[in-house]
Length: 160
Length: 155
Image (tube, rainbow over all chains, first blue to last red; front, side, top):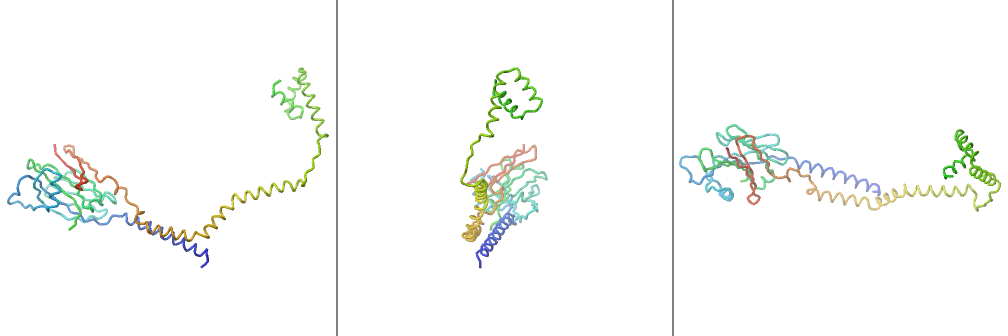
């Protein structure tokens, strides 16, 4: 192969690799389906009441909540897996009063909207990457029905 | 007499002034002995120069002299415009394909680092709002505990 032939081949290779790198980078920026878990949790200082369908919270999450919040006990009211796809908001009813809408706000950010008794109560944005790494997005508030107690909507990655 | 008048007088003597201005200056000179004396002097110099210029000889002919200058100018232009291109081509011929291969290899190795990340991935990870007037909400974030919390309290 002549010198000019080698040059042309090398530059063609360089251009091809450049385009391939660029396309790979663009494709990598698109969000993949994300497996999430939404849990409705009740926080109280009282023991687990008899006759209510409450589950004990897994110890790791319970300790995390105990470190940050004042309540001694945390019980799981409901849990719902969510597979989040791009351009497709997911609605999840956590209780008869509480519903959430989860969607991609953009390629890298998850948006969680809370609806209490049908009213849009608040919105939290959280990085999808942070959720994948084990961080939590929590919307919480005082329990209107029982003074001193609290409810928590915890969004996390759905890891086993 | 100011320098401007002297220059005008010289132009008048050389026949370079417009007719109207030449007439004005002629009238002025008719009443000004200094102007008349200078005009005489300038006319004498003008008359003496053409027939008394010393002859000078140069080793080359006039055509050869200017031709040499022109060729030197042309060489300078070629040097300025063409030589860098030839240098660049020569460098590319010698090292270009190796450089291209090296750059390609570098691009492949650096691809994971160069991959664009969405700005939101680097932005603060929380944005909170509550559209209800009778609801107070605030947020806090614990990096150590890995959680972002929006607390909602009804008034």
